[in-house]
Image 1 (cartoon, rainbow, N blue to C red):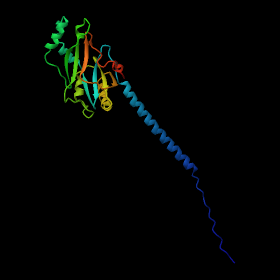
Image 2 (cartoon, rainbow, N blue to C red):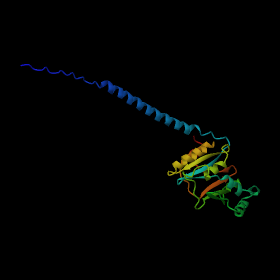
Image 3 (cartoon, rainbow, N blue to C red):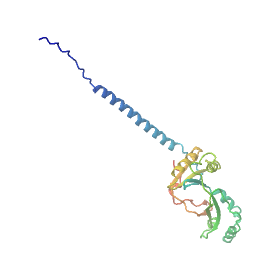
Image 4 (cartoon, rainbow, N blue to C red):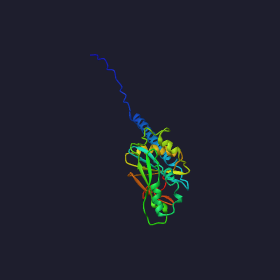
Length: 230
């Protein structure tokens, strides 16, 4: 009996090993590019943070910036002291120190603080050392928040009133104000100010002893506020 021969089929096996090798190489290259980009961006951000802060001048005075409660306020005592101590050069005795304090007229105020003198007897021949500067917060006066920190803010105006060749900024930062501190510090550095900072909260009213050499260390003994930091 005649049988029709069967058609022979040839199956070709597909080898996927080469394709998997190519895909593995592509994934490795893409992963390398992603990691490299992230590292480069992080390095650039770090360099931008450290390099731009200038060095402090040899005769620069320290101006405190309070970053607390999510806002920033500049505490510059120099203008108030100049007004309060006007005429003190004629004082020649301890009794006259008390009379000078009693005769002090208007209490100078800024956007956020008011200032006055208080007599404090100390065993010294320095008559100025018998005075304290008292700094009090003005009721209802709120600083600039992160959404207000632009070139029209009170903070920007306070910075523009200072000379970076004459002053450097010491930031006192509480735990709720890190973000607003960063923005405020960026604005200060962009204007050429050297800066320092520490995490702390100040209690008002502040009582600051005076002397013939000026104010005693405003935030003593906070060492990190005694010198600028990059």
